[in-house]
Every structure is written in C-alpha cells, then in structure tokens.
Length: 314
Length: 314
Image (cartoon, rainbow over all chains, first blue to last red; front, top):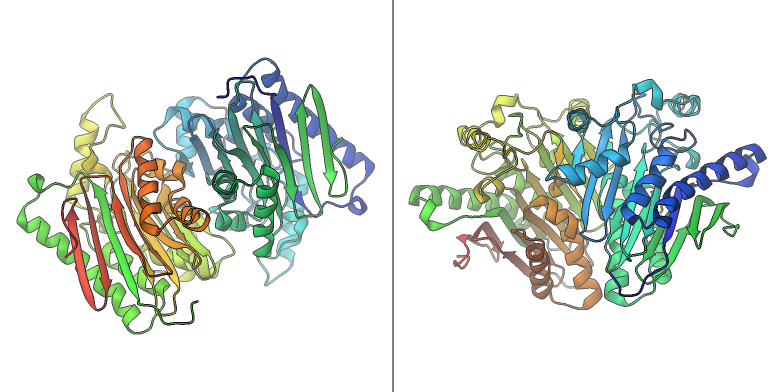
C-alpha cells in the first residue's frame, strides 16, 4: 500500500472479437452499452464507499454474469454436447491469493464461487463435480441448467455443428464474450476477475485461460492486475497476465508498453484477443488486436464505455 | 535451434518433501534409486537415438507413472472421498504447444493423454469426464480404478482423516511425490512434463499446478524447460515455470541464479518444493528448499540420482 491515497479505478471488458458496426443494430449497441454501464456502476459503487478492489471486481463481473448478453453465467456458450461449462477466476493483489473453477454447471455466479474457493479452501482451483459439491456444502446459489441457456447460443451451436466434418470450426463471432474486471481501490490494492462460458462447440471438459491464474487472470499489488479475453489457448501459452506483470516489474516498461508487447505476442501466435489492466501507479489500459472489444472504465465518478476498435471510450 | 549440435540432457524429479535418512530404510532407498534410474534410462534412450526432447520427457514420466512408488499414475494420492484424480501436463519448447489434464480417473498414463490433447485437439487442458470421453474416442489405454490404488496411499488417507476437525491437515510426507522431466535434445529443442496425484485428502475436483501451463510445467526453446513439485497452490501463485523463464529472458540471470530466486519466492509464501530445469545453452538445475527431492540427471551416457538434500547426485 502506498502512503498517499490513490484514485480508485475500475476497468471492465465484456469480450473481444469480430464486433463491427455492419453487423450491429442501434438497438443491440444500446443494450450492450447499458449492460457495460450497469457493470461499471455495480463495481464502482464499492470503490466509492471505500470498499476493496476485490469486492469491486466481483460485483462488476457478477453484474455481467446475470446479464444474458455476455458469454458467462447466464448466456454462456455451449459445449459440443450442448452443455454449459463455466470457467472463472479471481485474484487478490494484496496477498496473491487466488480462486478459480472450471467445468462448473450449476453455480449461479461462478465468480463468487471462485472467491469462496479462495477464501474457504486450501486450494486455488476446483473443477467439475467438485465445484458443485463445494457449492452445495457452502450454500452458494445454484441454478437449474435451463437458467443459463439462451436461444442465441443454441442457434450458434446448431450452425457450427451443421458444418459437417469440421467440428472445431468457429467464426470469430462465436469466440468472443469472456468478461472481466480489474480495479485499484483507495488503499492502492489491486484485484482482477474473469468469467466465461469458454467458446461455442468446445469439447466437454475443456478448461480455458479464464480458470488459469497467470494466464487469464493475475493480480499483484507490486505490478498489475490483468484480465484477458480472446483465444484462450494462446493466452495460456503466452501466460498473459503474468507476462504483463513480469514485463512491468523486470524491464521497466510502462503499463501501456507492456500491454502492447503482450498483445503483439498473442498476435504472433496467430490469435486475437484483448486485455484490461491497472497498475499501482495509476495506469489503466484496454488493449486488443480484434476489430472490437466491449469495454469500460470508471474513475472520478465518471463512466465511459466503448465497443468498436475505432472508438474512444466515452 | 542452434547451429552447432548441443549435448542432450535429461533431468527428472520424483517429488520433493520431508525425505530424511531417519525415516528411510536401505531397502526403500535402493528401490527408489532403481526407479529413478529406470526413468532416466527410458528417457535418455530416446535422446541417444536422436529422438526429440518431447518424446524423452514423455517416456521418463511414463516410467514413473507405471511405478507404484511415486505419487502419479499407479500409486497416486487419494482425494478426501478416497478417489484417484490425476493431473498432468506437457509442453513443447519448439512451438510452445502444450497439453494438460486434470481430474482424470481412468487414463492409465496421464502424461500420454496430455500429449494427445496437445496434438489431437484445438485445446490445451481437458478436465474430469471430458478426459475419459476423449481418451475413449482416441483409443488411449484405460485402467480400472483399482489399478491405481496402493495400500500406502489408503493408509495415509485413513491416518489424515482420523485427525478429526482438521480435514486439511497434512504432514510434509503426504504432500510430496509429483514427478516430472525436462530435456534438451541434440537439435537444441526443450520440453517439459509433469504428472501427479495431487496430495492426500485434497478436495474432489482440486486442480493443482501440474495441470497449469506456466505454473508446474513450462517450456520455451528461447529460455528454459521446467517442471515443479511441492505445494501446488504456491507454485500457481508464483507461476513457477513461467517466472523462471522470464527471469532468464528479461534479467540476464543465469539459470542457476533464476532457479534460486524462484525457490526463494516459494519460500517467501511459506511453502516448500523443488524444480528441475534445463536451458538451451547447456545448463541444468535441480533446486529445492525441502529436506530432500528424488532426482536424477542423464548426460554423456552417465546416469546420476540422489534423494537427500545433503547428497550430491552420483
């Protein structure tokens, strides 16, 4: 913690991908902007009241999990078997404590379960049936499977699977949607959280970067808090969040330079995606190499959101 | 790949922990040394014939998975429910391709399944039932659950669970046992592999660092190949393998200096464990902060193993 009070800030993303004006209607754009604003307000309200970065990122992600527009919680992508399997993780920059889950099918808010795993078990990552067993023991809210399903995700899976002989072919549109939040609170503490349904037609049991501490989520008060969205396997090979942290710590690069370098790494492996990050010195970035990324930032009691790549946050 | 031929080397570990002469019999020590030698010979035979580092680490780990003395494959630790749940991962330093699995119950050799996931799916990490589904489709060897059980692991679980009200209390002895291998082949390619049963009395569904690329396993021809053993949650927070790689790449530290720094990080979080690593320039290290680590190195057609902390490999 620094001696002088620092300005609280919250940054969120709602997925990066082939998001273009041509394929969007004004109505859809308005809906997304409102959903991003709702998430920002939920998280920033915590910071405004002097709450922790950890609480803020949980509330911001929880808001998006409850909204069917994003690929997480309600509205998640479906596996090749038509099932829902959530991944999520959260990390506290004060202690580097972390919690994660994968293959979760019944937990209503995966990000809150990830936090409970961090705080109430000696483990970091629980998967599959173990998540539900833990959630039931702890009295976490469960939901019936139908709660998570949306017509759009069912339609996307049918379309992909109609392309016979190409079980893994996806359009860019079917990949994006992972959500995340990073925050710095008034005490200078950092936190990061990420939540996703993975991507459409993934194999049952596929675990992505959103459940991997260091890849999709990382936070260390001494360096950065980061959350990623995009081609998860590439984020795992690049170890995105930890790479960003090491570049800032070990090379003296600014947060902006380091984030650009990491996105370039992602591109070198032929992948697209984006990241959001804050550092302890006041920096905040939203970087991506895809046509668009749902994103927003809240600071100084001001809320700004953006969607397309050629757009300033406003 | 470097222009000049480099000397092939294979390094293995069979777990780090409270391994002391006082608690070992000459017979047990001899058995372990033979098992380590068998693993070294299996992996080094590949390198000797001009094979790849990737094949070498798979064969070395496979040898330990088939041996009931190590906490992986046959002989794995049991969860708090008395079940077997294997984690494993493998990474190819040429391409940074990677494969991993967690919560695997029926696959006879988890390390070979991790490699199949790397080579035959668009994913890196499969978990739980998804592993078995994939393994059956691919015709990988399965084993009945009883195959993996050993009297020692059942006894360990009973002893731990007899300590009522302290469900997560483990002795150091119950933690160690994860195995791993790292290699550099004659073409200068690096690879790493790790396989484990986790630790005794873990919650069902717990995923450890051995399934996390960047934490328990990492390989990049440009830097290092590394495999870890010890308190998995700490290895995940430290992002062990990737941290070692970044220290070598970004700070100019030698492999030895960087490995010492990473083990010191592990210690700062109050944890114990060890790592093995090789780099592209010919370096090889075996570092740990526990009383002992089962370990061995093969190079120049010579095989050396060691167990206790005060012992040179010979």
